[in-house]
Image (cartoon, rainbow over all chains, first blue to last red; front, side, top):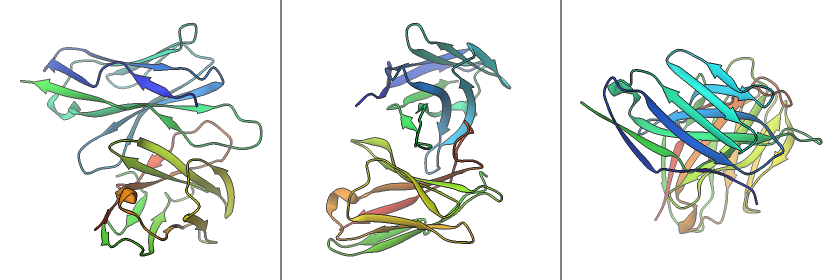
Length: 115
Length: 114
Protein backbone atom coordinates (compact mmCIF):
# COMPACT_ATOMS: atom_id res chain seq x y z
CA UNK A 1 0.00 0.00 0.00
CA UNK A 2 0.99 3.62 -0.10
CA UNK A 3 3.22 4.81 2.66
CA UNK A 4 5.11 7.76 3.99
CA UNK A 5 8.87 7.62 3.71
CA UNK A 6 11.86 9.63 4.82
CA UNK A 7 14.91 10.48 2.74
CA UNK A 8 17.63 10.28 5.41
CA UNK A 9 17.87 7.93 8.35
CA UNK A 10 20.38 10.12 10.27
CA UNK A 11 20.94 13.86 10.30
CA UNK A 12 23.82 15.43 12.22
CA UNK A 13 23.83 19.18 12.84
CA UNK A 14 25.81 21.62 14.94
CA UNK A 15 24.16 23.08 18.00
CA UNK A 16 22.68 26.44 17.12
CA UNK A 17 22.26 25.62 13.43
CA UNK A 18 18.93 25.10 11.73
CA UNK A 19 17.78 21.55 10.95
CA UNK A 20 15.64 20.44 8.06
CA UNK A 21 14.07 17.00 8.08
CA UNK A 22 12.35 15.83 4.92
CA UNK A 23 9.53 13.45 4.23
CA UNK A 24 7.98 12.14 1.02
CA UNK A 25 4.47 10.80 0.93
CA UNK A 26 2.69 8.98 -1.85
CA UNK A 27 -0.97 8.93 -0.86
CA UNK A 28 -2.66 11.77 -2.71
CA UNK A 29 -5.75 11.21 -0.56
CA UNK A 30 -3.91 12.34 2.57
CA UNK A 31 -5.27 15.58 3.94
CA UNK A 32 -3.58 15.84 7.33
CA UNK A 33 0.08 15.58 8.29
CA UNK A 34 1.81 15.50 11.64
CA UNK A 35 5.40 15.59 12.85
CA UNK A 36 6.32 13.67 15.97
CA UNK A 37 9.47 13.55 18.06
CA UNK A 38 10.40 10.34 19.85
CA UNK A 39 13.04 10.22 22.55
CA UNK A 40 14.52 6.99 23.82
CA UNK A 41 12.12 5.11 26.05
CA UNK A 42 9.19 7.41 25.34
CA UNK A 43 6.24 7.57 23.05
CA UNK A 44 5.97 9.87 20.01
CA UNK A 45 5.47 13.46 21.10
CA UNK A 46 3.35 15.78 18.96
CA UNK A 47 5.33 18.69 17.49
CA UNK A 48 3.23 20.32 14.81
CA UNK A 49 0.57 19.48 12.27
CA UNK A 50 -0.66 20.85 8.97
CA UNK A 51 -3.77 20.36 6.90
CA UNK A 52 -3.67 19.91 3.16
CA UNK A 53 -5.29 23.31 2.54
CA UNK A 54 -2.16 24.97 3.93
CA UNK A 55 1.42 25.26 2.63
CA UNK A 56 3.16 26.38 5.78
CA UNK A 57 2.61 26.43 9.47
CA UNK A 58 4.83 27.80 12.21
CA UNK A 59 5.19 26.92 15.83
CA UNK A 60 7.75 27.72 18.46
CA UNK A 61 11.14 27.22 16.71
CA UNK A 62 9.52 24.81 14.23
CA UNK A 63 8.04 25.26 10.80
CA UNK A 64 6.33 22.66 8.65
CA UNK A 65 6.18 23.07 4.89
CA UNK A 66 3.84 21.09 2.68
CA UNK A 67 4.33 20.82 -1.09
CA UNK A 68 1.38 18.92 -2.47
CA UNK A 69 2.63 19.13 -6.04
CA UNK A 70 5.60 16.88 -5.30
CA UNK A 71 4.09 15.24 -2.22
CA UNK A 72 6.79 16.51 0.09
CA UNK A 73 6.73 17.54 3.74
CA UNK A 74 9.54 19.11 5.72
CA UNK A 75 10.18 20.07 9.32
CA UNK A 76 12.49 22.97 10.03
CA UNK A 77 13.90 23.40 13.52
CA UNK A 78 15.51 26.74 14.23
CA UNK A 79 18.56 27.16 16.48
CA UNK A 80 18.86 23.45 17.23
CA UNK A 81 19.46 22.60 20.88
CA UNK A 82 20.81 19.44 22.54
CA UNK A 83 17.29 18.62 23.68
CA UNK A 84 16.24 18.33 20.05
CA UNK A 85 18.19 15.08 19.70
CA UNK A 86 15.60 12.42 18.95
CA UNK A 87 14.00 10.44 16.15
CA UNK A 88 11.54 12.47 14.12
CA UNK A 89 8.61 10.90 12.32
CA UNK A 90 6.26 12.33 9.80
CA UNK A 91 2.79 10.83 9.68
CA UNK A 92 -0.16 11.20 7.38
CA UNK A 93 -3.85 10.60 7.65
CA UNK A 94 -5.90 9.82 4.60
CA UNK A 95 -9.18 11.53 3.96
CA UNK A 96 -11.72 8.78 4.63
CA UNK A 97 -15.39 8.52 3.88
CA UNK A 98 -16.45 5.78 6.22
CA UNK A 99 -14.63 6.77 9.36
CA UNK A 100 -11.40 7.95 10.85
CA UNK A 101 -8.27 5.97 10.15
CA UNK A 102 -5.04 5.62 11.99
CA UNK A 103 -1.89 7.43 11.03
CA UNK A 104 0.63 6.10 8.53
CA UNK A 105 4.15 6.78 9.78
CA UNK A 106 7.40 7.23 7.96
CA UNK A 107 10.48 5.31 9.05
CA UNK A 108 11.98 8.15 11.06
CA UNK A 109 15.07 10.37 10.96
CA UNK A 110 17.51 10.32 13.83
CA UNK A 111 18.58 13.90 14.54
CA UNK A 112 21.98 14.15 16.25
CA UNK A 113 23.13 17.47 17.69
CA UNK A 114 26.86 18.05 17.69
CA UNK A 115 28.22 20.38 20.44
CA UNK B 1 3.51 14.35 29.80
CA UNK B 2 0.90 13.58 27.13
CA UNK B 3 -1.79 12.63 29.62
CA UNK B 4 -2.12 9.14 28.11
CA UNK B 5 -1.30 6.39 30.60
CA UNK B 6 -0.26 2.89 29.64
CA UNK B 7 0.32 -0.09 31.90
CA UNK B 8 2.38 -2.10 32.37
CA UNK B 9 5.57 -0.47 31.11
CA UNK B 10 7.26 -3.80 30.57
CA UNK B 11 5.89 -7.29 30.05
CA UNK B 12 7.86 -10.49 29.65
CA UNK B 13 6.09 -13.69 28.76
CA UNK B 14 6.45 -16.88 26.75
CA UNK B 15 5.23 -18.05 23.39
CA UNK B 16 1.65 -19.25 23.33
CA UNK B 17 0.60 -17.04 26.23
CA UNK B 18 -1.99 -14.26 26.35
CA UNK B 19 -1.50 -10.72 27.69
CA UNK B 20 -3.60 -7.63 28.18
CA UNK B 21 -2.28 -4.11 27.77
CA UNK B 22 -4.16 -1.21 29.26
CA UNK B 23 -4.55 2.40 28.21
CA UNK B 24 -6.21 5.40 29.83
CA UNK B 25 -6.72 8.24 27.33
CA UNK B 26 -6.32 11.94 28.03
CA UNK B 27 -9.14 13.45 29.98
CA UNK B 28 -11.96 14.29 27.58
CA UNK B 29 -10.62 12.28 24.65
CA UNK B 30 -13.13 9.84 23.19
CA UNK B 31 -10.96 8.19 20.56
CA UNK B 32 -8.27 5.63 21.33
CA UNK B 33 -5.76 4.21 18.87
CA UNK B 34 -3.35 1.29 19.25
CA UNK B 35 -0.03 1.12 17.42
CA UNK B 36 2.80 -1.42 17.27
CA UNK B 37 6.42 -0.30 16.90
CA UNK B 38 9.07 -2.80 15.84
CA UNK B 39 12.50 -2.41 14.28
CA UNK B 40 11.52 -4.01 11.00
CA UNK B 41 7.97 -2.65 10.58
CA UNK B 42 8.26 0.73 12.24
CA UNK B 43 5.14 2.30 13.74
CA UNK B 44 2.00 0.59 12.49
CA UNK B 45 -1.62 1.38 13.21
CA UNK B 46 -3.55 -1.54 14.66
CA UNK B 47 -7.04 -0.43 15.62
CA UNK B 48 -9.15 2.55 16.71
CA UNK B 49 -12.08 2.87 19.07
CA UNK B 50 -14.35 5.85 19.47
CA UNK B 51 -16.65 6.19 22.46
CA UNK B 52 -16.78 2.44 22.96
CA UNK B 53 -17.23 1.43 19.33
CA UNK B 54 -14.65 0.05 16.93
CA UNK B 55 -14.03 2.72 14.28
CA UNK B 56 -11.15 1.59 12.10
CA UNK B 57 -8.81 -1.36 11.67
CA UNK B 58 -5.27 -1.37 10.45
CA UNK B 59 -2.70 -4.15 10.37
CA UNK B 60 -4.10 -6.01 13.34
CA UNK B 61 -3.69 -9.78 13.50
CA UNK B 62 -6.69 -11.99 14.21
CA UNK B 63 -4.91 -13.12 17.41
CA UNK B 64 -5.16 -9.54 18.65
CA UNK B 65 -8.31 -7.81 19.83
CA UNK B 66 -9.20 -4.64 21.66
CA UNK B 67 -12.09 -2.99 23.41
CA UNK B 68 -12.98 0.35 24.92
CA UNK B 69 -14.95 0.48 28.13
CA UNK B 70 -17.65 2.93 29.30
CA UNK B 71 -15.06 4.89 31.28
CA UNK B 72 -13.15 5.20 27.94
CA UNK B 73 -10.09 3.22 28.97
CA UNK B 74 -9.04 0.62 26.44
CA UNK B 75 -7.41 -2.78 26.52
CA UNK B 76 -5.45 -4.56 23.83
CA UNK B 77 -5.49 -8.33 24.11
CA UNK B 78 -2.75 -10.35 22.48
CA UNK B 79 -3.11 -14.13 22.40
CA UNK B 80 -1.16 -17.16 21.17
CA UNK B 81 1.90 -15.00 21.37
CA UNK B 82 4.78 -15.57 18.98
CA UNK B 83 8.38 -14.38 19.09
CA UNK B 84 7.59 -11.88 16.36
CA UNK B 85 5.05 -10.14 18.59
CA UNK B 86 7.89 -8.70 20.65
CA UNK B 87 7.56 -4.96 20.16
CA UNK B 88 6.55 -1.68 21.72
CA UNK B 89 2.80 -1.16 21.84
CA UNK B 90 1.56 2.39 22.00
CA UNK B 91 -1.80 3.81 22.75
CA UNK B 92 -2.81 7.26 21.51
CA UNK B 93 -5.91 9.34 22.05
CA UNK B 94 -7.61 12.27 20.39
CA UNK B 95 -10.73 14.24 21.09
CA UNK B 96 -12.78 13.39 18.02
CA UNK B 97 -12.97 10.55 15.56
CA UNK B 98 -13.38 12.39 12.28
CA UNK B 99 -11.76 15.76 12.57
CA UNK B 100 -8.07 16.23 11.92
CA UNK B 101 -6.78 16.48 15.44
CA UNK B 102 -3.37 15.35 16.67
CA UNK B 103 -3.13 12.02 18.40
CA UNK B 104 -1.31 12.08 21.72
CA UNK B 105 0.73 9.03 22.61
CA UNK B 106 1.49 7.27 25.85
CA UNK B 107 4.97 5.96 26.64
CA UNK B 108 4.10 2.44 25.57
CA UNK B 109 4.32 -1.10 26.83
CA UNK B 110 7.42 -3.05 25.89
CA UNK B 111 6.45 -6.66 25.27
CA UNK B 112 9.16 -9.29 25.22
CA UNK B 113 8.36 -12.85 24.18
CA UNK B 114 10.85 -15.47 25.33
